[in-house]
Image 1 (cartoon, helix red, strand yellow):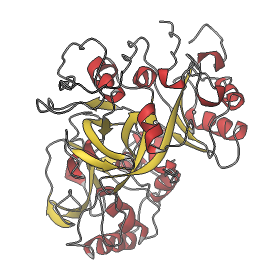
Image 2 (cartoon, helix red, strand yellow):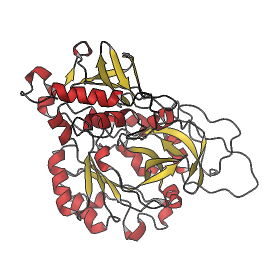
Image 3 (cartoon, one colour):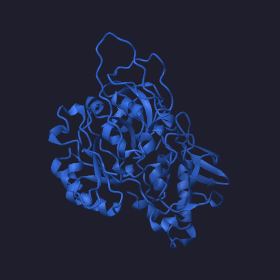
Image 4 (cartoon, helix red, strand yellow):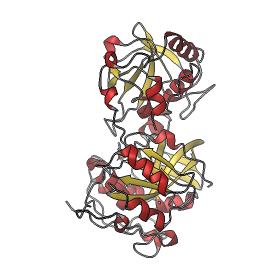
Length: 425
């Protein structure tokens, strides 16, 4: 399969060119070998972006009939699918904004690295990255933290026509879904929607007025919990072209990360996407070297720390010391024992070897895959307490508590290695 050219977005005014003269078609930057086929910026917590890029952006229910469509539509009605259904357009005599149809899907690209810079990417910088060995495709995005319904939400503004190619096939193939994003909806992660209380079709406060939650969009970037179109990103004040998605499926991700850091300015942050367990972590816990795991005293300190927060409220995105989400509780409690844990569930999933639930010990981490928009996504974590019980921060409206371990949607149990945890990037 040969990659098609990535088409320019109409918001740029000149086809094929982005702000500052950067072409939206970035294929010309990638070195060819065998015809193979960039509000106020709040610093992105890129360390929390080491997770699987799956971007399953699914509409789970049809919007209520008669709801106003502020964007309108001048394109043919897309075919209805189980993934997404177009928003009904309310008849109106006032002019509506014309939304250009999203370009059809052609070739999928597997994303491997997420790069964030302090300033917009220049064409020269993009050319340097594109010529690195192993790079197959590049995709620019706008990245920042915005306030959504009173919550600080890490957000990506993307071109739906090109970004869709970096998502799984079932999601990428949904024309209605991406047309809705292009029409002005915000797609939020399932965790933010379900656990954080941002239900589908709800109107929420944003930096530039109300926004409609039109989809659940588990991007898989870990900390990224909202996706909008680039046009919407402009109205929200997101910085332009400060994020870059790199597809290099045949390259050594760690080595390529180092090379990218060398060719880009100081302060650039690069996070690995689609992390693969190092070889030792694919072995059983018995095969790990002595001293790989937490000491008995460290486990006791972490458990006592977590228990000291019983009754504290769950708050999406909270890291303590008075409110927590599920992975925030894990990170805080283990920090009290001197163990540096990564921030989000997908990162915590790779902090040690997996062990059978029947062999779980106090201090082990238990993980679940409960996201219907992406069955492979690690969406919840708890700390094993012992005797079939766990301590967890469940969801909005609940509190930190000890409860019985349940096995529905169980992903597995991980025995934490402080050394492995400290190396997660």
